[in-house]
Amino acid sequence: MYNIGSGLVLQIWNRNCAANTARALGAVKASNHNFTKYLCRVKATSNEEAAAKAAAVDADSGAPTIFDKIIAKEIPASIVYEDEKVLAFRDISPQAPVHVLVIPKLRGGLTQLGKAEPRHVEILGQLLYAAKIVAEKEGILDGFRVVINNGPDACQSVYHLHLHILGGRQMKWPPG
Image 1: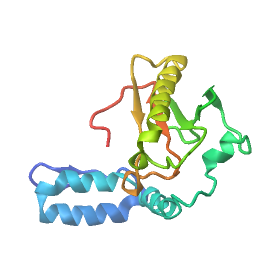
Image 2 (image 1 turned 120 degrees about the vertical axis):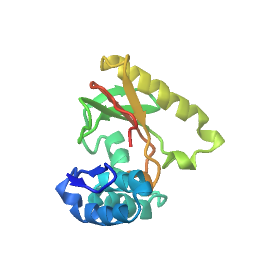
Image 3 (image 1 turned 180 degrees about the vertical axis):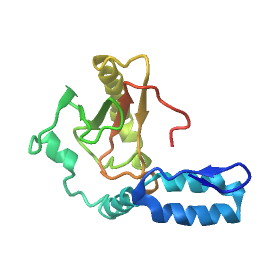
């Protein structure tokens, strides 16, 4: 932890982001009123940011995503729920005791929420209803979070719309 003045303390969360921490520390020292802005940037590792930026380059190419391969059963997944339009499976890098991804089986141009069109209204509703079913099946109906990362600034790394269902522990606020 570093004391940066005015009672503010900067803590390094991850050794991989030491360079970001150093830059943020310098910026914060110059202007303490921007502390929260820089602190949020320090939290995301540079690897996540780089992966998100790289993924965004081919976001709308139409090339199969890892999720398309899971849907086609080319890549194994631990499936939690499936119906004719939606598939839910466990995240391979869970951020909570329960971390399930819910995806539409047909991408249909819905690479991210920011690209949603009126024709996507039905599947968006089905994805949220599937999130409720997953939460019920996983025993977290009384407390879970639904997260959608949209674009590189939100560290979206797969451009096939997906919901993260997180639970099984106390969720904190603010989440970012």
